[in-house]
Picture 1 (cartoon, rainbow, N blue to C red):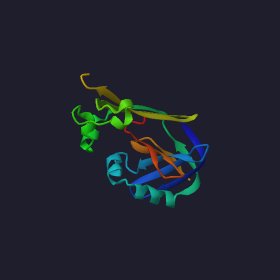
Picture 2: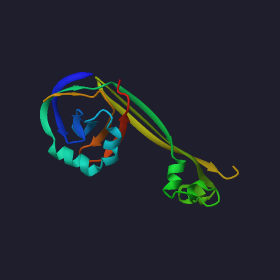
Picture 3: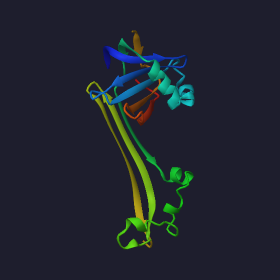
Picture 4: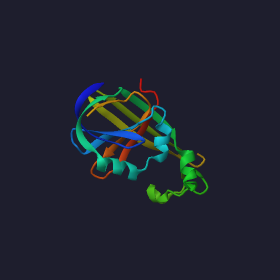
Length: 175
C-alpha cells in the first residue's frame, strides 16, 4: 500500500514513529519503525509508555509518503501458565477454587480448566479490522519524506482519549 498524506511523524536515534489516525480520531495506529533494519529487538527492549508519550509530544504533522505492507495477523495464546505465574493458582485447583459468588446456590464445585486469548488484526487499503477475545473454560468437580516500512517493525493501536494501547504487535517479515 502506498499513499501520500499528512501524518504525525517523529523520530529519535532508534526509531521513526508514524501515527495513522482512524476516521473517528479517537483511535490511531502507531508504526514504530527501527532506524536500522535489524533494530527491532533493541527498539522493543527500550520501548516504554514514556518513550511513546515523548515521541507523540514531539510529533509534527507533515506531508509524508508512506509505503506499508498489507497485514493480517492471528494469534492464539494459552493463558494458564501466565495466570499461574501472576499468582492466579487457586482458580485452577479443584480443591481450592471458590467461585461461589458467581453461582446460583453458592456451590464451590467450579474451577478453571483452561484460559485462552485470541487476537486478529488486518490492515489494508480500506482500513483496520481488529478483534480480541479471552475465554476461560470452567469445569466442575468430578466432573516530509518517504517512509518505507520494508523491514521489521512494531505497531500499536491506541485509544487517543485514554492513551491505552489496545493492540500491540510486531512484524518481522513485512514482505
